[in-house]
Image (cartoon, rainbow, N blue to C red; front, side, top):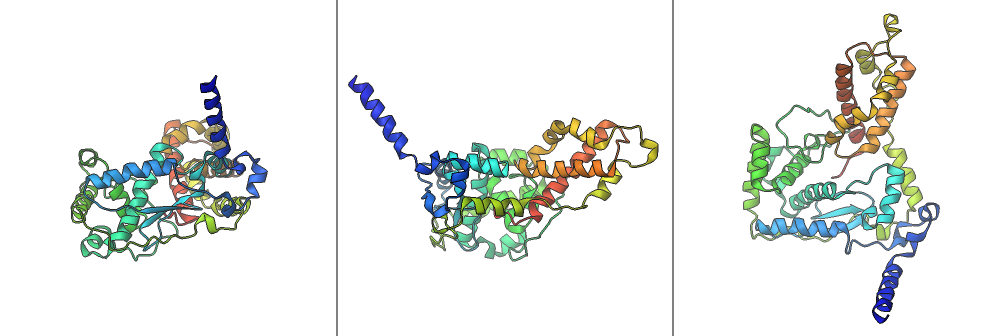
Length: 353
């Protein structure tokens, strides 16, 4: 009885450690300000995954421990050797809210989280050791001062860039090329050598990062600032205002941006009036289309769903019909959908990963 009583008391204490806001309804939680949540990364999945990544760095002789803080999104500010982590990673209750309003939790599973942290730590390392100032870095990746494009057009067939986060993100900017290359390099050497055999340009970048990291062994960082940017503890914004702004900002706005491509892919010729409507065809194969391209988009299912719905709607309004072999229509549409989704992802914001 005494043992059972002690266990019961322990369980009660564990329950009382949960913040009061975890028991609020969504409506009540949305009215809460960020600063009133009193969030911490202590004992979080992010902290546990970061410990593993730090051990990987230490095993290679790199003495660098980036600091982390909670903010509204993932990012690593220029000049700061640290990583901002989105607030929802601090608690499962907030992740459920994030999924309800954004359709996905960026970094919400172990694999995705590890990939993001490896990418982010590359930016922090770049800041800590001022790597982008090196001529060899610029020769390999380009100038970090180059403006970020509002929209970039990836080349899926290119073998000059590694593939890590998805949607060919290494092609967007020199600093992202470095971060993606470093993230792949942080895997066991045999893996990336085998994976990128036959990709000479991408492999040359990996070999460069391998040599570059060897020069950092046992060297302390040149920049040791612990500065934080937009920490949630100082934000008086409510969650409701945050999600209202996010949804308005992230929603794709393509009034007629792909009508021309859809007309080339499907048909509005009266001769094909008896063929299946393209909108019906796409709805019927929706799951198959998503499975064809999901792995290239790094888990951005929310945006993929929005663009797909919008394109199906345009097919319906334009009264387009299937005019070619089903397999070719599917593969061609998958390529078009991938390109348009990538444009939305990078045209609506700068993803500071």
